[in-house]
Image 1 (cartoon, rainbow, N blue to C red):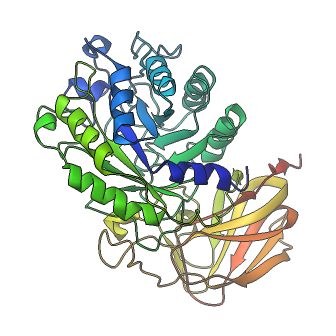
Image 2: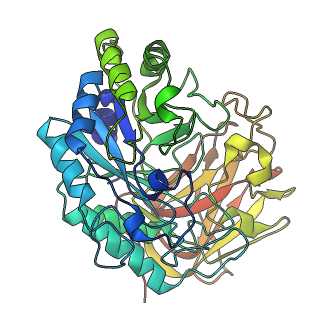
Amino acid sequence: MGNRYRLQKRFVDWRFGMFLHFNMGTYHDAEWVEPDQDPNSFNPTALDCGQWADTAKSAGMKFGVLTAKHHDGFCLWPTAHTTYNSKRDIVREYVDAFRGRGLTPCLYFSIWDRTNGVGPKGFDDRPPITRKAIDFVKAQLTELLTNYGPIPLLFLDGWAWHWAFNHQTLPWHEIREHIARLQPNCLVLDLNGLSVPWHSDLLFIEETKGGVFCPPDNTYAASQGQTIAPAGWFWHPSTPTNLLTTTQIVDHLARLEPRYCTFILNCPPNPQGLLDDTVVETLQEVGRQWHPARRPPLPPQPDVVSHPLTPVSATATTGNAANAIDGHSDFGWNGQADQTLWTSEKGQITIDLGRVFTGIDVLTYLPRQDTAKDFVLEDFITTGNITSYRISASTNNKTFRPIAQGTWPADHTLKQSRFRPTTARYLRLETPGPATASEIGCGGLNRKPKPLH
């Protein structure tokens, strides 16, 4: 999987797509529905996924993204793993309608499931993530990625809420590898609020978070999400009467195209299962006014760590080393308050993988992601960012051997240090000066590291 350039280039060349927030929230006038609703309250009386697809095509869109499952856990397909689902296979109708009109169907799936025991139901409890919960997530992903043909893009959500769980307690590497086994060409996008594609194939910028916008100098394969109605991602009674104008939508496309950023416009179906007439008319007018602009091809993209490993602990000379491996996505758009940073005056940290692995060939470093001014993605704080480093490895935490050294630019971008495949349980990162880190990880770029015993 290492380099995903061909797939990433295809995505950014789509330019324009439709996000379809259609789920239990549609029927309860809520963005986040409380768990355990009556499944029968989801009741589209005139559902027509063909109308969605026809409207998307009329606007010049190339793909759709349907909320197969949102945070409350209601499923738009007849899953075998919970009764909290639609008995009508909405996912099937959606993928068939979009493919039938030459559009590409993609899916959104919330890892956090407030009805079925994956993370907390409320905001105060923190139940542990069990093996049963992990297997439940994998079983549902198996249904979505084996029963509906090629799904070239999967939006994952729910990991970003650090009070619920993170990429460590609900292991990112296991879910990522599971997806890759089922559909190797499926791009994975984690809605984590970062301005760099950490643990993701694509960058996602949620414009509704304070008006944040893709930076003018962006060269990552990126996407930006906005709602056609300020009322929210799901349909609300005010949705049909308060929409972005055609000019506003076309202006978004013009601004984002040279930034290699695909515009994903959320167009929520109403409780009948249809796009409102005002939405249809607006998008038809967009299709008459907008035509894709010429631009150079997507620049080369960073390699993706196909097989990340999950450290079990970390130690450091100073500072809270656990913050560097906690798997929190460090939601940078809201400033520093949501970040968990390891900071140290002496700059040495050792991560423990729990057992000896062979074939480790990369260490990753995610610097701090907060900005000096909220929501301004060109104004990142760089204090303490590691610029000079040495990496050593050990199997016993006593004898360390050097495996890499080098320099990194003092910016906020995700860093990688590659080295010959090595055998280790412990990796130590050292820098001569102060250090600040959001996340430190390791793994295999193209091959999966194997436990020695």
